[in-house]
Length: 49
Image 1 (tube, rainbow, N blue to C red):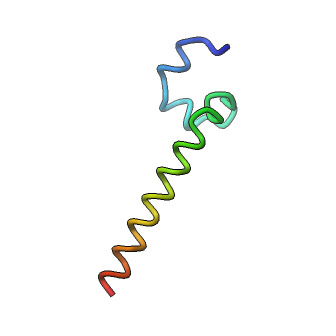
Image 2: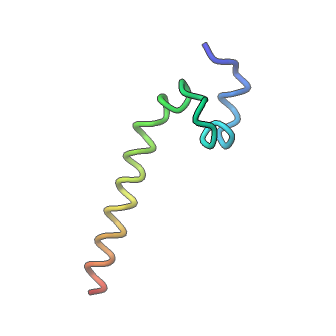
């Protein structure tokens, strides 16, 4: 279990690599989100060219 305070402070948790548990929890969602952003950017680049 993590102290509740950590769960409600996302910014320091994201920046702090030592906060492994929290990082693992949100990792999948964040990776998918970043992947989607990349795809959108690539599509826009192709459209512009």
